[in-house]
Image (cartoon, rainbow, N blue to C red; front, top):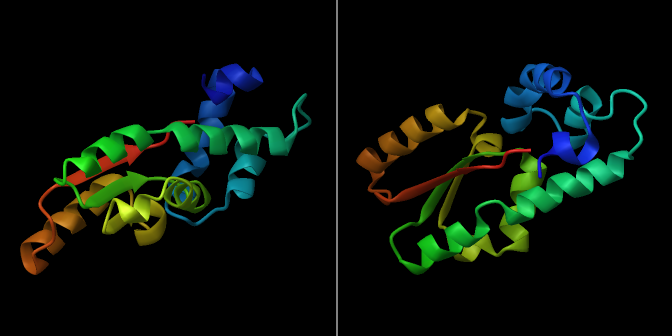
Length: 142
């Protein structure tokens, strides 16, 4: 279930506001609260900020974790590239012990770049520094 469905948000309004701030949010320039101030709880709503945040963390908890674990068990992947906000990314890394799975996290919120730019940086590092050739990429969709 998406945030739009769960909180009965107007799709066009939410997407317009989301597009204005998502780049800064994913690059670690805005906090989750700042993102919500501009997208989900910028006006009175029939739900609380905490309910919306809880939903965001629940989505983060379920997103791609099983895939990451199965990829890690294959011993083929040691780096992950993703577009996530700092708070949601750190939550997933800690909650699911992803540090035990991956050696390197090239997350948009850590490097300050969107996914495509981060992938080109990893390619450069890989060719120059002998980084792993197998990388998994993921994104959380609210």
